[in-house]
Length: 284
Length: 164
Image 1 (cartoon, rainbow over the protein chains, first blue to last red):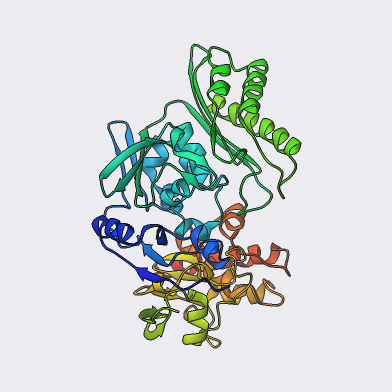
Image 2: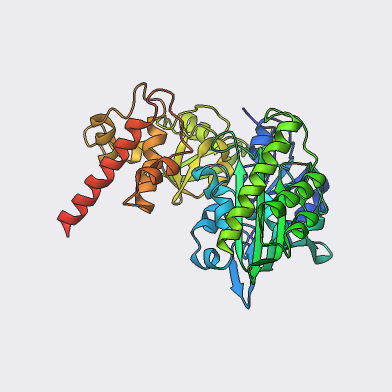
C-alpha cells in the first residue's frame, strides 16, 4: 500500500512546528510515532500533503515526577512508559494499560501523545487519562493552554485541539490507592471490545473515592461519574459493584461493529468493569 | 509526486545512500533500493512482523515507517545478524528445534528475538510468548519457535558464563 505523496519536515523545535502548521493549515499534520497515522495514510483514509515529524523536536520526551505531580512529554513511547521505574511506582495503571496496547514492536514507536491526541475511540490512554483526571497541554500560535482530559473529546477523531495546535504534554496528580486497567480484546494488537480504567481509595474498610472510565464503548472515552459515586461509602460488596455497573451502562453508547452487536458489548462492558473494580479494590 | 530526498542509512554496519520519495516505506526502500531482501513484506498492515528490523535499538515493523523517518538511523536486518556459514545462535537454535516450516516469518522472528534476549536474557516461556506477540507464524503453532528462543537464551547465557 502506497500513501499519497507528501512534503516531509523534521523540525528541531516547537516554534518551527507551529510556523509550519500556521503556513499550511489543515493540509499539515504532526506525526509522533506514526503507528495510527501511517496506516491511515496507506489506506488513503488520511491525506497529509505536509507531514511534520516530531522525532527531532527537543523537550517532548521527558517523564517528570515531582511533588506528587506527573508530567509526560508527548513523545514518550509506550515502551518507555512500561519500563520507567519511577512511573511504575507513582502511577502503575499506566504500565498495566500500556502492556495491553498493540504489540512489542508497535509499543517502541507508539507514543502517549499520539494515543491521547488521536481521538480514535479505540485508543486506550484517553480513558486512563480521564480516570486520572489528567490535563492536556496544547501549544499553538497564541501560546499554551490546558484542557481537562474529561473535556477534550468531542466525537470520533474530533477533539478540542485546533488544527494549528499540538499536544505537547499530559500531567496529573500521582494517584493513590488501588488501580486496574482491564481490557477484553479479540487478539493481541486489537482495540478493546470493552475496557475499563479504575482508581479507588479505601478508608475504614469502605470506598473513599472511585474514578471509572470506559474505552471503545462510545464515540469518545466515557468517564462515568455516576459509576464511581455508586461505590463510594460502600464496602465494595457485590450490590455496590452491581450498582456501579448499572450506572456505567447508563453512560455508554456502543455501536455494532465487527467486535459484536450492542447487547454483547454492553454485557462485556459489565463483566470487564466488575473485574476491574475487584482488582483495584484488592490493591487499594 | 514530490521531489526525491537524499537518504542516508547505516544498514548492518555499512553506510548506504540513495534517493527516495519521503512516502516510500522503509521495508520497500530496503528491499528495492538496497537489495536487502531478508525482511519480508507479509501483511503490509503492521500486524504480522515479517518486516521487523532493529532501528536505533528498537524492534520496528518497517512497513509502518517512512524512509524519511529512518533517515540517519542505524538499522540491523537479519543479514546483519548471521551469515550462512556463521549462523547466529538463534538461527542455529531455530534449525535445531524446527522453529520454522516455510520460513517466511523467520527473519522477522529472529530479528525480534535478538532484541528480546538483549533486553531480557533470562526469559520465561510466558515472557517469550508475550515478547514475540507482534510476530505471526502460520506454520508452526509457535511451540517450536518458543522452544528455539528459550534454548538459544540458555546457550547464550552459558557462553557468557564460560567467557567470564
